[in-house]
Image (cartoon, rainbow, N blue to C red; front, side, top):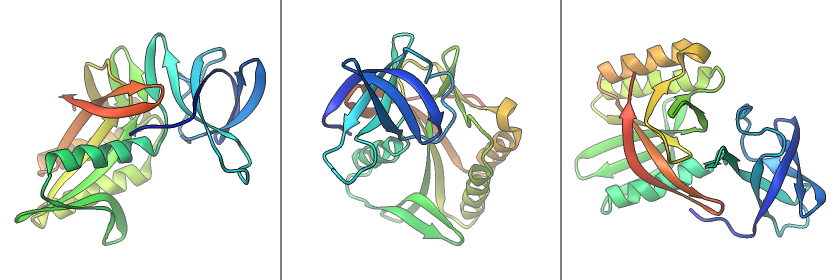
Length: 223
């Protein structure tokens, strides 16, 4: 996936989860943060950030904050980017399959449904921006919705569907992925149970530049 009209800036503050203040070419600007997560370890004063500029004059904010440099390592923090990158990735992996995004099953809507010959596959994507000592962690805040999705994937695995939860880590230099039990143990417990009952748990890293993000490699999952 690619962005256009990208600008380098310096992060100043985040008054609330939707907006941030940055300095662009010596000018103070307000930008939309395309991630409602905490991102406290990324969005620190004076950090290098990257903004996309909108051509829509009706927008309240002219810029979107999409990437952050953390100690020389670039992190994409756009919450829409993982699904876009996953769509590109799945098309490469299933070139002849029917791939349908945002498909409803029961009371939930899952990110992708794939029909590949006789296979019926449900894929749920989770974007990951939290990293500690080279290990990617999810979630960065309690997520009852995430637990619900995992339990429902487990139910559909029992019905004969192939089910997968795909953790898209929005940076490159990562050694492994683990559930963040310190923040939300129920999510980790649900994930471990799901794997035992047939849900595929996959984590991938991404090649990230200021104006792009692309899934690169599978990485080790430690549950």
